[in-house]
Image 1: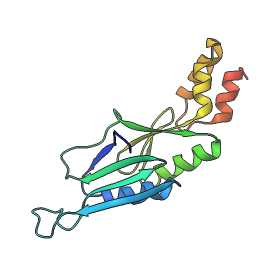
Image 2 (image 1 turned 135 degrees about the vertical axis):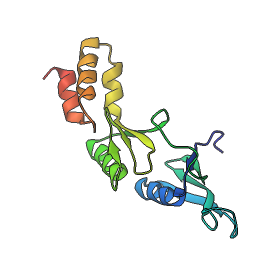
Image 3 (image 1 turned 60 degrees about the horizontal axis):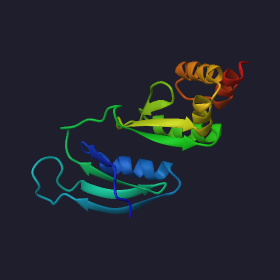
Length: 159
């Protein structure tokens, strides 16, 4: 059992977000959902109140809590990718229908939730003991929105 679970507060579209995320991540499942009772005051009556779902082995909870709180980039989800195809897949899926490309592998999905889509190779470039190579890779990354593994490798190699 997972001891700590990310809990995401949505205005009134938590169910839509949960369906999107579970459609994007191949190893996912919806565990449960609870709804506000009919007659509940405000616009949330009958809507999903809370739900629990799992993405790639990590459990999440969502809440339709109203407009009190908004997401910002101070919290993001870091998605490790093996290949450029995987980077492209997550990038395209999470920026679709109103998502926003940011910088250095960061994006916001259409709900305003921040994600980092990062090839595993990037961490190897940045952690490399040859600081000149690492710095070239860092400078290349700083010029990108979606990360390009081939371009990062070329910068790392000094090409």
